[in-house]
Amino acid sequence: MIKILVVSDTHGMIEHAVEGIRKEGPFDRMIHLGDQVEDAIRLKSWLGIEHLDVCAGNCDYPSEGVSEKVITIDGVTIFMTHGHKYGVKYTMDRLFYRAEEAGAKIALYGHTHQRRMVEEKGITMFNPGSLSLPRDWKMKRKSFGTILIEDGRFHMEYKYLK
Image (cartoon, rainbow, N blue to C red; front, side, top):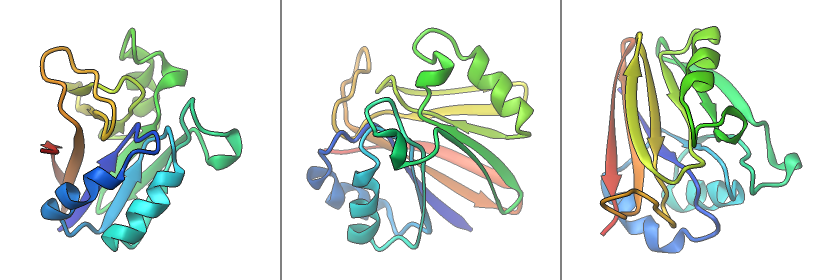
């Protein structure tokens, strides 16, 4: 089984999150979906995570990484992006079609700072929320996501910081 940490929109404020994340580990991989991708390198080191995938967000310098990426882990294809180039604040359509085009079962995105998980036609679109500046309507809790993958199957959940 492969356990993946998914974070987004850290905006330079991660020190408070390390212990809460560590309690959910250990993690085999980490995915950072942008807005302060340099935080990903520090988190990777502090948490002892071996493999890191990042996508640059609208608050990152263009030189800090690609804006989208497709990876396959144990038979599960994942499309990842920050989301700002797909208009995710207004609609999930463009994100869905890009993930479908990539052959992905999972589409990971950030940008809105709002937790969200929607399944449509075999594609699960997942936003882990924000570790630093949550904008959920009802429950403004700092959050991250986890993905467990084994033999082509996956399970995703939100985790919350206290």
